[in-house]
Amino acid sequence: MNSKQLFLQLNREITNGGNPHRRVLSKDQSRIFNYRSGISSAIRQENRGKELQFFQALNNLYTETNFPLLTISGTLLLFRKFNFNQNVFLCLEYTLKELGTQDFVNDPKFWEHYLHFFSLNTRDDLKSKKPQLLAFSKIAKLLFKNSNYENYNILFGFLLNHSKQMVLNSLTHYQFGSNTLGHFAIDGKIKSLSTILKLFSILKKAKAEPKVFEMFLIQLSNSNKDFFAREEKFREFLVVFLGKFPTEFLGEMNSLDLDKLYTIYKLNSKLFENFNPEECLNFRQVNSTKYGLLRSEIVNYLLSKYGISFFFIKNFNEDKLSYLELNWFKDVVSGKNLVYSENLPFELNKKVVHKFNTVSNEWKREAIESNYIMVELWDNSKRELSVFDGLIWSVILFETQNIIYTNEVLGYIRATSNTPFWVKVVVQLYRNGFRTRNNRITEIFDYIDYQVFHLRRVINFKNKKIANLVNESNEWHEAIGNFKYGRLDKLIKLPKSSLPSFEYEDEKENKKYIIRQILTNRELAYEGGELGHCVGTYTNKCVSYGAFIYSLREVTEYYEKDQTAEGEIDVVQTIEKSLITIEVNKNYIVQKKGKKNRRCLPFEDRIIKIWAKENKLIFRSS
Image (cartoon, rainbow, N blue to C red; front, side, top):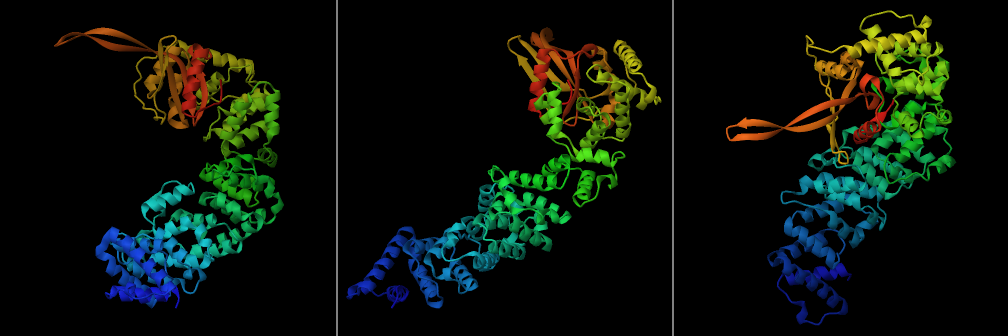
């Protein structure tokens, strides 16, 4: 007789009131008797009242199925589950039936592993647990061989426990965030099981690591955002990907990474098919501790090799493409020349598009050699440019061949319906001799904006002498600065920024400063009157073109006597003195000017830089 048969014989005798110890036992019988006694002793310490019921249920499990004899620790684990909910035996029998004749089914350690993760609450029964057990059984039959199930702890826990805490643990283990509800299977049913099994078959042929299977299981369990993986073409993509890249690459990607690569594959599968696997060495040194880095490198490599613009690649990787920009991206990746895309901001020719597509470090080198733009400023500016900005940049650079001029004027051209006008103007001004280093660009642009879009004046820029334009701008600014703004008939509220208020204390000088947003047209008028510049004319710029105006002010506190019912008290009063007006558009600081458009003093610059750093703003101008 084997150990299981001996146990059944002795257990039946003991549960019926017998005492095998009174007779002489063989060596094997003594071993099994001691095994059974050890289990009994441990059970009595936990709940003596359920001992007999447990051994009877255990006897039925061993008698009616081919369930292997558990170790003492495995049997005690089973008893603890039974003590909490007796339906554990029905669940075991169901799982055993679904697993069929797999080799690992006869391994007691497998079932101990199973019981370690299996969870039942007081209301659970076989019906409520069936979806999870079925999913587990189907996946186990596909993946497990002998003892390799020990490498799938997250999978065991995610399927057999699937409590909100276990789902959260699984998500955090693979750095998938903490959206528990987004991955929690309602009623225990894994909606995408058929999709998961099809993907697992592909991954199994590719000999993927356990963590790859676990990551797919977690991400596709119940999340609508991963619908792409349910498409037949995605499985086609996965086969191509695994034929070109090492399988461990999948372990360094999440669903967002795969979705982006799959998007490229759907647009142009040849980018992957023509990829040489030996070139994967280019990605070996990528830091894989953070998801997205490896995918970014692959996307950058595939698209840049195909001649896709840096601006498209960067914004696609960072998920910053607007609706129109995404349509342009799809066009160019599919093989269409950008010239023929719809809804472009202005007319492009193939030479400009070529410049747009060939952004490289040569531009950076030219900027550095000019000894005018700092490397840090260049890198930050280049990183933050949208595709729209990149198109503006490319056409101005193509027409002027001056990287410094292009960088400077770009900060004053926004993505609006007026963009074609400004592109033509800055190019024509350059041809007329306008240079940003020698002229006060912000004042001139403000002057042109007011004359053309407020007064509806027509200016012939082709014949306009720069000296005359500068003189006209200076005269206008002087007139605006000398005008003391009084009451404005209509109060206009300006769009409110999301940036918080900012305070700064200079302990050495014992002075306090604030940076606050200007929120009405009257405040703009007051600011312009105080500092003698044209910010009072910026109402339309704020309302229609995305500008936000801030004021750096020195705050002076003083005490004033106030008479109350309880007597005279000191009340703190404050006076704010405007120092610098700051224009922000998107996340760029476009300009910052003091009285009569003077530049910032060192201490003012220092405060503004601290504020900019806290709010992740980038300087586009001095």
